[in-house]
Amino acid sequence: MTNIKDLTTGQIQRIIGIKKKIEKLRATVHKRVEKLQGKIEEIVDDVMPPPLVALKKKKRRMSRAGRAAIAAAARARWAKIKAAGKKRL
Image 1 (spheres, rainbow, N blue to C red):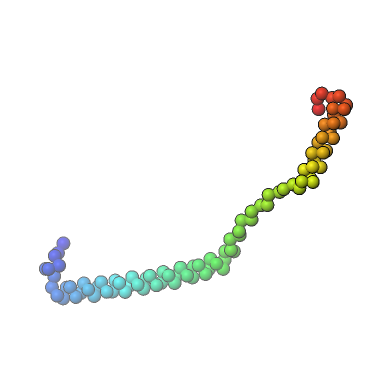
Image 2: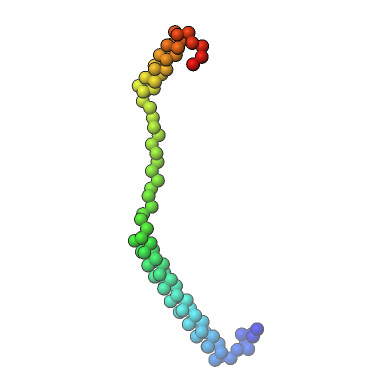
């Protein structure tokens, strides 16, 4: 590897010019990549439907009157069975 002290002024100027070209190319590539990413996002937005929001299922709740009616029906069944004298269902 050569030491920077051993380079001539012309060589250093040439290196500086090359470095400037590399930086300019890097900036150009960066701009093009951003432009392409924007176009890709546009295409995806046009093709893909928006994501559906997951609907949270409502918890099914029974009214007090409904619970009371079921309990009353169960008590009536048991009363009928006990009145008949059955030991097993």
